[in-house]
Length: 315
Image (cartoon, rainbow, N blue to C red; front, side, top):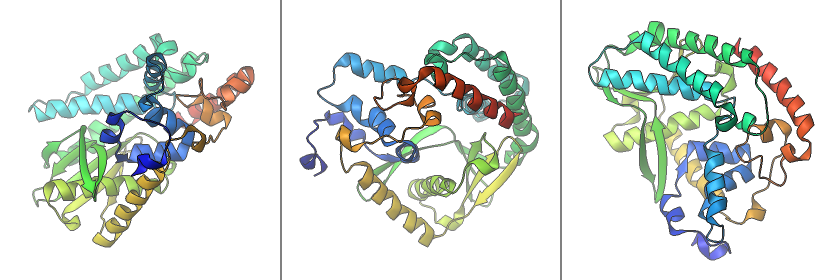
């Protein structure tokens, strides 16, 4: 019924894969226009293939603010994969993978890092800071976090999954899923930022995971435990959710999906332009309202200030 109220014609595959996810929710809150470019623009029938390829290229870029989290997740994913194969975890191997990943980003920054793609030059101290803080996270994972999992049964890790709320498809990817000897299923999510940087949205993310576990394993919420693990400190934040709380979140997800799909018209996806946002947006270089195109020289100065703040936080 949604298509009857939208003039924009979209490819059939869009409606087949157009589900809800926590990442979609976050991107829409970050900037409506960025959401449009990522999820709707590539599905428009009137857009030429060359333009769609350009969007695909921009989507492959990672911001300075996310490359560390991505590399840490990949490194831990590989180690848990070895655990699944009954092989011991190897801290030296993990460190090597992480350091090599940083080197690849350093060597290919203009092609892989969003801000560098847009003209930013990085100081070598940036990668040195990421190396130091990343190795601390890996130390915490091996020395503090992983020993807590030795008595838990492996179920799955880093696998794309989906379930239904009414007719709506919910997509997700859980970092690590285990089961205790008491048959409690444990959802673990690695966090690479500081504990005070996540705010209230974390409840929505964890509730999505718990709802999937309830659907997939036919478990009541009292037999499911969630936890965010902050790798910068090794601390853990537990979650236990009841039926009433989860029902409210299910209703919110359905309502949120309705808002995301109320229009597919470009004019209805307004920007939220700020220099900080535009410089860390994958589509800042093509958005007509982007602050990048407004004053590029000034934007580079602002990026220097943002980078200094990021380095200060990391250190």
